[in-house]
Amino acid sequence: MTIELSKLKARWAVTSVLAITVMCVLWAIDTRIKAASGYGILDLEFVNTAERVNAMTAAWANAGVEGEMGFLMGFDYLYMAAYGFALFYGALACREAFARNPGRWRNGLTVAAFAPLAGAGLDVFENAFEARMLFSGATDQIAALTYAITLAKFALIDIGLLLAVAGLVGLF
Image (cartoon, rainbow, N blue to C red; front, top):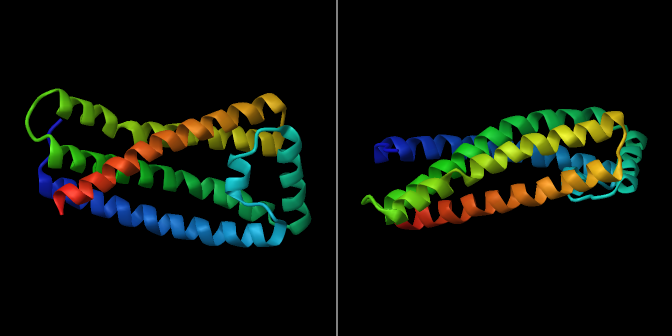
């Protein structure tokens, strides 16, 4: 996998700006939801029992923010693509900074660069299971599965963040 460094930096910059912009919109909506109901999207992501999911759903209904929560979850799909590719390009920048020559190190960094894309893929499943719980009722099994997916997602995103920061240090 080869990409011209100037094109890589441009793609990284565009996707990073998009990811940050979308994150700010999500944060603004989530802040309003949490202020009105006591629960936000991260609360839902880190819950592992049906009882807690149902408590959040009831709080959102009582606060009248179900529509905003639905919009937030839908808009999150744009964020998944944006952060996934921003961190992917950041990880490739790390590879270009520290492993320009063919070899195991370069191959390993190429594979690791796909971690944030895999994390974004898990985020799709996480949102689908969350939507299933919100619209069809939560079970402890689905809540626990969703929680496990959330933990795996954040582990893969953390790999991307670490590599992207290293890419920043190495290229600039």
